[in-house]
Image 1 (cartoon, helix red, strand yellow):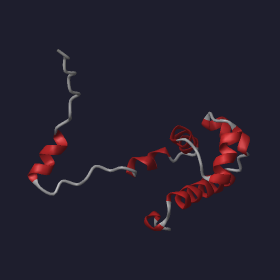
Image 2 (tube, helix red, strand yellow):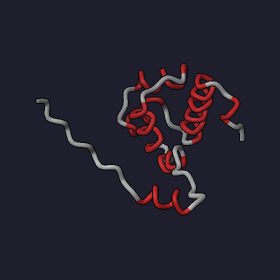
Image 3 (cartoon, helix red, strand yellow):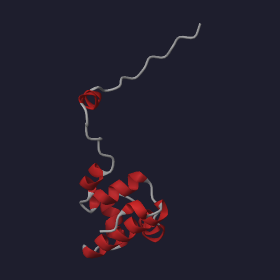
Length: 103
């Protein structure tokens, strides 16, 4: 498998667009069928396959329709704890701060 570490963002987008096209064809789905299953327009799907440009919402919808949504879980993994201090940091959740009252 090709490592994305050596690709530009545009190249990575194009690669994923080709993979979506390959999966669509594997399922023997037309643009119309995948777009309908994903709840997006045919124009958005075709634009993505041709240019690699798409919104995150639409990309997630396509992934869901293709049964690949679980793969996004690996996109931004939590860092592994190396020390006890790191482990404690992972347990703490930040709370939203209060607004200061202006005098």
